[in-house]
Length: 89
Length: 452
Image 1: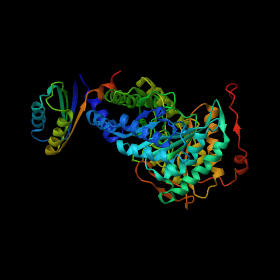
Image 2 (image 1 turned 90 degrees about the horizontal axis):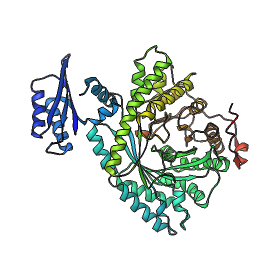
Image 3 (image 1 turned 135 degrees about the horizontal axis):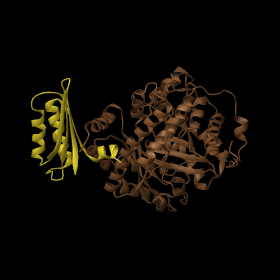
Image 4 (image 1 turned 45 degrees about the horizontal axis):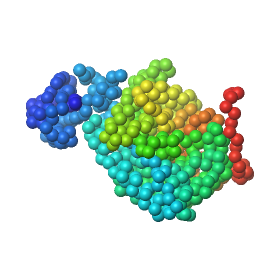
């Protein structure tokens, strides 16, 4: 099972480190990362494998929400199907 | 792998353009709950609804979190209560509405539809008692919705029922006068009613439906409006193509949620309803789509053509995106629930006559329209007769959800708040239809050939 994590917000030091740290603790493997900074706005999209995740989806979702608050950015954690169903036939 | 633009497009639709799943509606058959004792029947109804739907709200919330898509409403539709209650000894069916309300509260859904009767060709005893109980039922319960089908293309129009519904609507308004006649917002009079519609207030679980089923209604007028705003000066072919593609994407989301809900609840998936349903939120308006096509205000000449294009393109895009499409499927044009419609009505651009014309080319009909409180019952019946005639002759669903607000006159505005929004009191033709409505009887079914 895969999920997509998007992080959008003002750029600062340690965004990737904080987010990937939370994922590593939850035993979530990162499959792909793309990241850009446009006019000081940081945006990162990650495709992750959650099949060996050691906690509930909701728990990781809450932890990422907390990380988002600490970093002052917006983090979304969504199952991949929502994107594939919308953009792939 | 994935494409960053596609992911950001989806996220943008949800966060900026109000894309959401409007409702997951569980249809539950209550046919096996009939009993010659009203008390026993009500007990069975309550237990069955709670047994089937106890997980509905939680499952909806889980899906919402996992996919990051808002699911605004979780609702229930049931077998028309006139059928379920008919074999009981009960004389006042309002008690059945109360038990539906209790069950809805117990499982946490915000509306339950099915306090309904189908009388397009005539009344049974149960139909008569149910319709008589509607004013009490809707004014004394919070979450129950009622509907009455008074006409079909195959049976014609039951003008006795049309006449009676005028009085019932007036009585509903009177009984809820301290709340702006809000009981009327929970009552729909239909022609050609669909049996699998997930949208309130007209939802019920038809007799051809399975034991239990999941139907989903999607929405996203904001997404369509935004897409069109970027097409300044493009021709209609391009506009239709853009709406189709957008409707496809919106509906795929509905299909995904419907399948997921069906799997998690272990209930078969029924249909996705393709309707573009507005809400009072800024940017979530069907009127704005029509205006984005180049009309100064919704209601201006050209509005019917714009709506025809929109409705058709939404269907064409949506049909391929879902394995089963049903319900109403088109564009809703409720007045009070759509900020753009409210603005158009207040400015005088949008009249009831224009809305009636618009209903010829889109789903449903005269929806959430507030009119002066002193409008005679016969005029309301005549409005219903006009609207169902459009449905009957054109072989489509039409409906009337109209609110004669006691004490209010043309130009006033009634505030409901929440999903129901605010409604300006619209102008009604002052000439009488009394003699016409008093005739009673049935208008025969129309010819289905020699179409001109």
